[in-house]
Amino acid sequence: MPGIVCIGVQWGDEGKGKIVDILSERADLVVRYAGGNNAGHTVIVEGKTYILHLIPSGIIREGKRCLLGNGVVLDPISLFEEIETLKKQDIEVGSNLMIAQNAHLIMPYHRLLDGLRESGNSHRKIGTTKRGIGPCYMDKAGRVGIRLIDLMDEAWFKELVRMNLEEKNVLLTQVYGEKALELNEILDQYLPLADKLRKFIVPGEKIVNESLDRKEYVLFEGAQGALLDVDFGTYPYVTSSNSGVTGVCSGSGVPPTKITQIYGVVKAYCTRVGEGPFPTELPPDENQIMRNRGDEYGATTGRPRRCGWFDSVASKYTCRVNGVTDLVMTKLDILDECPTINVCVGYEHKGEILTDFPSRADVLWECKPVYEELPGWMTSTAKVRKLSDMPDNAKKYLDRISELCGAPVSWVSVGPQRDQTIME
Ligand code: IMP
Image (cartoon, rainbow, N blue to C red; front, side, top):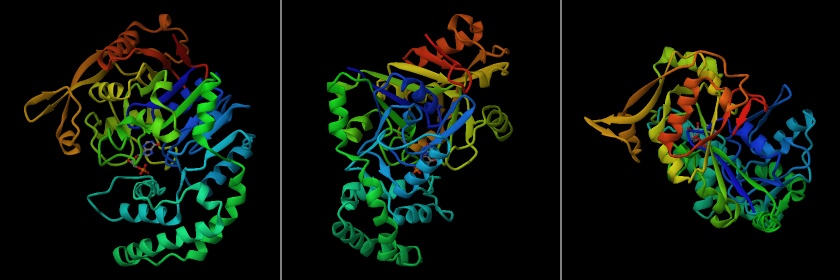
């Protein structure tokens, strides 16, 4: 039965929160499989805005079960802050949330090291969210990470932190000139959380496979975007997990044969936060116009997002790598007032036209977009609820995007509200 995936196929911030919220109406289980509290998913319901960072957006709907899979990195302090914020908005988090026992914990030294690596003028700056994501995944791959289950055994947890501090404190003091971290301070912060976390802990892979065996509808919620995927994104300007569809299997324990449909969310234009090449990025004045129209500011860090035209070279690539079966286009209404709309259909690089997405960031930095100019529709789409009622030029835009990306645009979002969605 359905294993449905919803991922962003640009650089994140495509508006997945709203789409996951709609899809989760049918879902029996909503699973986050990668990333951590670096994400910011905004859901607006009846005028109320909810911003989720780690907890799946499905939590907003009463009675939905949500799971944080093993591929997620968990900052327990931030998790409880998020639970408190939701509580203030009348969303109770209890038995509706489960966390895989083998999810890795973000530790204080991860946050610290992330910030230190990003400080100064290092040319290796990624523009991370400084939430400790990269250092935590480094420890996971380096086999020195600490998992949620480890926190449940006080003596064992203490030993793991002690061993980690031996190495981390050398880094902190000798490489970065910082103060060493104290073992007891970390234990005082984390050990009291063990009891609070215990009730959420499950064998994640068992939960998700049993649900699929019962023929339930399981929705896998992506975070970040496919161009931030550590393997298939604009490396090294990426996050540290497989944010694309490949992360679903390793990050939740389901076999690929259980995935039946893959929604790829694209914004009608492109945005990017943080450093890294962005071929269709607009010059500053036009960038600001697009940013204001689309209210493009990060939901996690508040950083202004860089804005640009739709890049079909990049999206064709991510649709292919991720096997996208349906495209969902969000924020089409933001283009309502554009007399003409550009779509990038190739890159000019050293006198050659590239139509395949380069895997080297330095090449991508040098690429100039080749645009196809399409006429705008110059009328509001915010109240359109059927594709047949769409202005002709908007339909042409959607058709052209489908054709260029090799996947049909099946849904279109024309505003933040749930009902501002066209599902054909
Ligand atoms: P990190 O995931 O905090 O290590 O950041 C790595 C890169 O991914 C930076 O460019 C971030 O701006 C970007 N990033 C991480 N999470 C998100 C997100 O939810 N939306 C958009 N960009 C993100």
